[in-house]
Length: 280
Image (tube, rainbow, N blue to C red; front, side):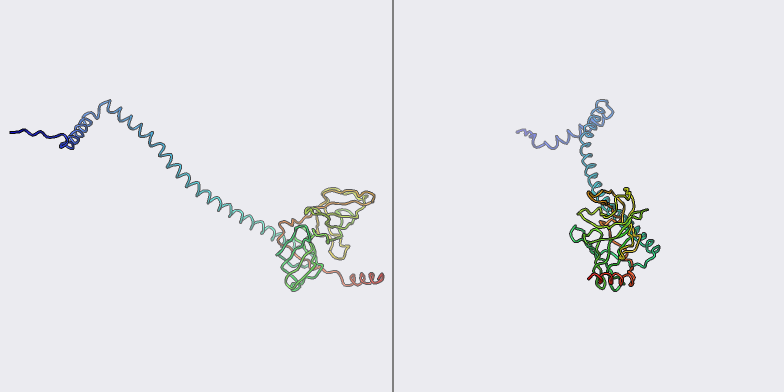
C-alpha cells in the first residue's frame, strides 16, 4: 500500500487562512502589549503624514471654488455700485437743474444732449428740442454750472448748439467786482481753457476771479456764470492783457441742460439794423 502525501500547493489557501487566524489571535491576545501599542502609534503617525497632503489638496480645491465664486460676486457688486453711483450723480445733476430753473428769472426749456462732438475741429452739440419747443436761433444754452453755448441751427425737434469750445464762438463778458469788459473766445486745441481779450492792463486781475456774461452784446443776458480766471498775461506792445479762463461747465460729462427762452428786444434789433444800413 502506497502512502500519498498531500502537496503544499493543494492546501495553500488553508495554510494562509490558518496563518491569518493565528495572527489575529496573537493580536487579540497581545492587544494590550506595549510593543503592539507602539506599532499602532507608528502606524497612525505614518497614516497622518500621508493623509495631510491629500487633505491640503482637498482644501486647496475647495478654496479655488470659493475664490472663483467670490470673484464673480465682487464683479457683480462692483457693477451694481457703479450703476448706483451713476444714478446718484444723475439725480444730483437733475436736482441742481431743477433748482436752477426754479430760481431763474427766465423761462427755460429743459434739454438732453443727444450728440456731442468735441474733437477740436468744428465742435458742436445737438439737443433734443427745437422750433416746436419755442427755441430760436441765438438763444443761450446753460446748465446749473454756467454757460454752455448758443443755438445756431434748428429743426422742428432738435437744435444744434455752438459750444464755448468752438473758434466761431464769441461772447461779451465782465470780471467779478470790476467794470472791465472783454470778449470771450476759444483760440486753441485745449479743451480746458478759454481766452478773454481786450481787457486793459490797468485792470487788476487775480487767479480765481469769476467771469460772467456782460449783457452788452444783446445776444446773451447778463450775469450768466462762465468760469474762473486761471492767469493773465500782458500783451507785448499793447495796453491790453490776455486772460485765460477755466469754464465752469464740464463738457466731458455734460448730458443735460436748459435753453433760456431769451430773445433780444425787437427795438434794439431795429436800431442795430438801421445803424448798419447807414454805412452800407
